[in-house]
Length: 251
Ligand code: NAI
Image (cartoon, rainbow, N blue to C red; front, side, top):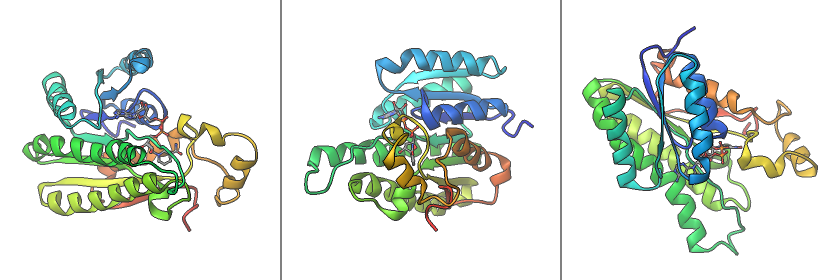
């Protein structure tokens, strides 16, 4: 089934993890995909992903661009519009965590997490809404987290950034619903990626799994499937929502 035939999607931070799974899932469903990576070290992975996507018969392009940089986001959006002609779906996926107890957290650590996880969502959304308004349609998907809903000791900056994403998402949905632009958030629980590699084995993994009714961490594809639903016409009447994909951890 080609749920995204003829659409162009952009995904931030897609050289690995959830972003990569989203890019692949979207391509599998017929979308052209433009994505960003940030560090020189990710270049090879990004190029390999472009090849993999192109092999599915759609267009793909990787851009080295920092989602936390307002002007870089503006340039990225303009470059994609020149190369692809349209942007139908924007997945604001780039994110980091710098966990520390509040007592020990420095202002620099706090600011870095807010800058990458929250300001990036503003930066990208600000620039994609103009072409989406012109096209009279669009779907924006922001990556939040179960931690933004529940909080977590040692993750105050991460939780604040991800809760901020939820409030931002609702506001954008209210501002742009009349323009047929939908804006939703996805709140994954623990997902098996590099970000959670410290949890993969041993006591801490077992402790967290015991808090999850489904009894396992998510795969990146589990999260990509939610993005597919929200990005496609199947999600046409959904806006301003946060879809929890956390195996029931938040109930
Ligand atoms: P990851 O660490 O594997 O991937 C994050 C990607 O974002 C990397 O490719 C990284 O290079 C990129 N990135 C970081 N800063 C960037 C910037 N300034 N500009 C552009 N790209 C940048 O992490 P994962 O797990 O794939 O996370 C993706 C998103 O999902 C993040 O927003 C994360 O907070 C969120 N999330 C992850 C969960 C998990 O358990 N792994 C749970 C809930 C949410």
